Image (cartoon, rainbow, N blue to C red):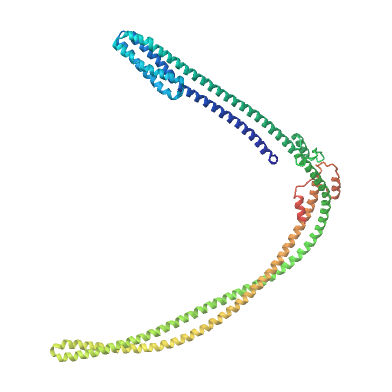
Length: 548
């Protein structure tokens, strides 16, 4: 129960209606199941009885047909007509024997059915005689058979079948009575469930109503009327709450009314204090505004002087940067000259090395020419020994010797020229080395000048940065002073707005009716410099936070 009380109203109602719905479903399900089971049992009983009785009816009908066929076979004089009747007799005999075979399992252990079975089997044996008697032409024997044997036996069988049917009918009536009993019992259970569901529904409705009224603390119309009074600003309305009620809606409304009444009273008292404080704040802000304006003018003069000094230092720094740029350019040019001299030195050394290689090659050529001259001389000697046959070879040897001598002479001349060139290249290399050393000294001097100019430029930049920082600081001080001036003006405006808000708040609070009305708007108006209607502006909390 306690857990149910803790639920929300919607959950309580949903659970209640869910319970009722579940009860109705249970009752309907029980009724459907019971009626279905009763109907099924009745149909099963009908089917069983039909399976038991139908073959019995068929056997009785077929037995009657055999009697009619036997009688007709005796009456008809025409042999063919009598033969047809005998065929019908055999056919109907087969029918009741088949029915007997079908119903035997259903009547196992039944004494009446045992007599029926014995009689039908005895009749089946007896019905063999009509054909024999008819074919033999023994009509008197046929008549005696029908009268003395067949008719009494058939009557006995019919009586036994009637006894079996009577027992089956009694069983059917008993089954029907049982079905009626089950139906009555099911109806009683349905009525009991309906009564139980009704009682549970009444109990749930009573519990829900009691819990709802307990949560409200009274009638909903009364709670609505109290809430409307408070919404209209009437905090003097009395709320009737039960003595032990601490959790209902009416108790919460009463507590809310008391708290609102206390808050409104405090707000009315606070409006007077706010009006006085705002007047004092406005006066102090005006004095602060005058002093701040004087301070702002002084800072503007200092800022102007610092701007002139900053311009001069910035110009010096600019000149130093230009001189540093020129020095760097000169250093780059001197470094390029030094690199060119180094390349010239390398080139001269390469030329000197190549000249020496050429001298060596010419020496080789001179040696080859000398060897060729000797070979040509030997060839001429051999040609002279050969006589007339070696004359042509002697001429060739002479020409080769002349060419070798000319090659040797040319090689000597080239060697002399190369030796002179090597001497001159060596002298040029020494001069280039001296010029390279001089360029290295020039480059070192220019780099030193560049470093000095860089230090001067860096010092000028540091001076400029320092003066700019001082200038920025003064500018920030000036900006902050101007902002302070603006804030002072805003504070003055806020103080005036605070007075207006206090007046507006007093008008708003006057809407509420308290039990003891002590606040007065006229007293508030006497403390303010002017009375004005409520002005839209920042809230009271924002004004107090801004002034703080």
